[in-house]
Amino acid sequence: MRILGIETSCDETAVAIVRDGRWVEASVISSQQDAFRGLGGVIPEVAAREQLKLILPALHACFSQAEKTWDDIDAIACTVSPGLTGSLLVGTTTARTLASIHGKPLFCVDHIHGHMASTWLFGKHTSETFEPVFPLLCLTASGGHTELWLRQSHTSQTLLGKTRDDAAGEAFDKGASLLGLPYPGGPAISRLAKTGDATAFSFPLPFAGESTLDFSFSGLKTSLRYLLAKLPADALPLENLAASFERAICRHLCDRVLKAFEAHPQVKELHVVGGVSANATLRSSLIASLPGIQVRTPVHISYCTDNAAMIAAAAEFSR
Ligand code: KG4
Ligand code: ZN
Image (cartoon, rainbow, N blue to C red; front, side):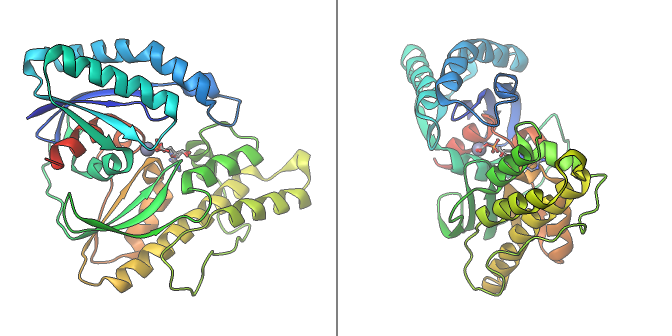
């Protein structure tokens, strides 16, 4: 089964062709990041207009990258929620129209289910084959959501915990904005953090000692704001601040994941997906804290952040 995936839930316009839910034959991601640089976030109306401009060129680029035609495509999949309404509308309308013109079945995919399928993807980035094993715990951490799932199969999962306020990626984005760094904040903070001392400043550990598997990031952001008010604005130790703030977010994520493994000792595999799974500090902290657990992240950074290959994969696995 070869599925054409379309993802337009936020500020990425993505189209991909994926065989059997795993092999990525083409993945095109047109990012609008330049349009929002310096603005500290995404403007929904502008994002929708950009989607409209980018969707057909992305579609053509995808077919040419894969060297395929419509005859080779068995079905179409598109993200239907959650996301920005205007952006989603561009993808769903395009997908419905193409399905009708070319007589292909259409799969409607939840964006978070898409991220959860991303650890199955491989393609030209790796020649290694691998087989994730259920049951597994999945941490989905991106700009709009932070959730912890116990997954029994592709179609059966239980939500163990979720953020009560900001998402992990949102914490990176808001922290970066306080530090005067560009959007998206995750990559900007993590770049600076490489040369900083992560123990220079201490931040509280949310829900320390509590049994909840929920997350909370807004307190970390407020702590950073108070800390900045006490430091000289013209000589901020940016590297140390970035490293310490990154460490605080990663510590909280690791701490709740560890709690989840304590509650579910039968599980031997952790998947980390969504934009924040690109973070090297998070990856290494989780691996170090979970001996004996197989920690999987998407095989390529472009499958961590929003992409359409994961939407095609999720459609395949929902059949
Ligand atoms: O999954 P994604 O592309 O979009 C959503 O579904 O929200 O995630 C985007 C988020 C942004 O908040 C961005 O700052 C964060 O992922 N992100 C990172 C990194 N790369 C992207 N956060 C931490 N470290 C990174 N390397
Ligand atoms: Zn996402």
